[in-house]
Image 1 (cartoon, rainbow, N blue to C red):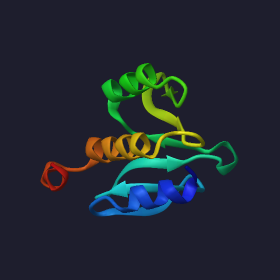
Image 2 (cartoon, rainbow, N blue to C red):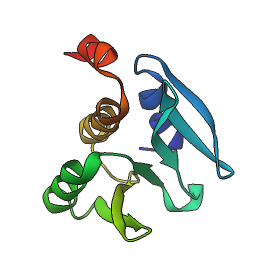
Image 3 (cartoon, one colour):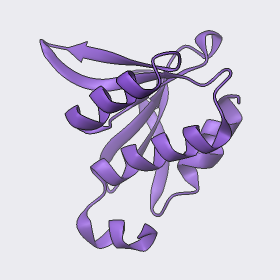
Length: 110
């Protein structure tokens, strides 16, 4: 997988839009960020999965996902997408979108 695939997956979700966050490409839904591309050289995306989702992803796929702490709290999951299965990447990005999307939008994927 590559950065272009991450962009396609993220922007394929309802009302997802790309913007710049801290000089990096990021994705949001109705003003709430759900993903941020990190240094393209590292093939890493930062996903806002919620605390339970972050812990679950890091435990289930430690070769691809790690916990990211910010200001003393668990904030997101770093996901290495360089050799991840496309279905897993799609699932993780969709979960991050669901975590940040308002309830009226989440039903569109249910």
